Image 1 (cartoon, rainbow, N blue to C red):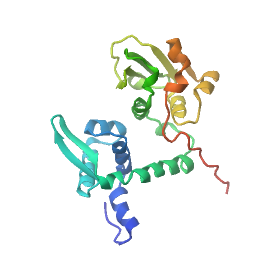
Image 2 (cartoon, one colour; image 1 turned 45 degrees about the vertical axis):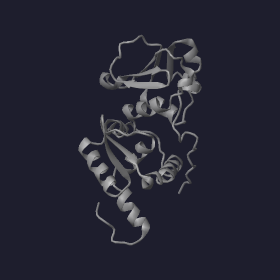
Image 3 (cartoon, rainbow, N blue to C red; image 1 turned 90 degrees about the vertical axis):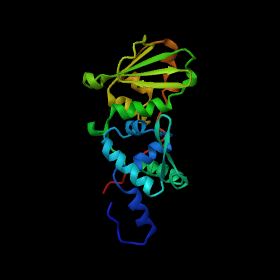
Image 4 (cartoon, rainbow, N blue to C red; image 1 turned 180 degrees about the horizontal axis):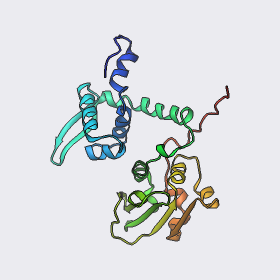
Length: 229
């Protein structure tokens, strides 16, 4: 990006971090993602060519390192990049507290939601045998309506196509309802009570859903009450 022409450290830092998508790429790296494809899943609306360009820029500025492995290429944060952890976390806290608004359809993305959920589901509630969870977003077209999480031990795989296994639990809601649950705006209990969430299948998993479903790491941060003008 074009520089600010200032020696101020805030200006210099913004030259590195202020480009569109860059903080979100760093967020994904801080979450442990290392491959190009995994990073793409965390920024699904970003084109592959733009992601590649941003990664090259971050490598050039010493924020990330690129390494060739037997399976291709991995990306990881340098000491410089790791030092951004508290900054990105605090940016999220500020956003949750001050930049939240009522969710509109343009803010909702099933692929990002399911990607986040698959990373934070509590696998301790599932046995070593394979468990299949099917999510149905009833207000979405067929192409993006059905999602599967396959839990085996501590591993959770995400599928947009039917993995071909029997479903243990079917979870039905609108995408907005599930996003609200994920963000801590709506409890599973309230969503059930108000008819916004329907869960059928394995009775043990059904009863314990509140415990294993997980939530955003920022769900505990309550939005601030904005003063009226």
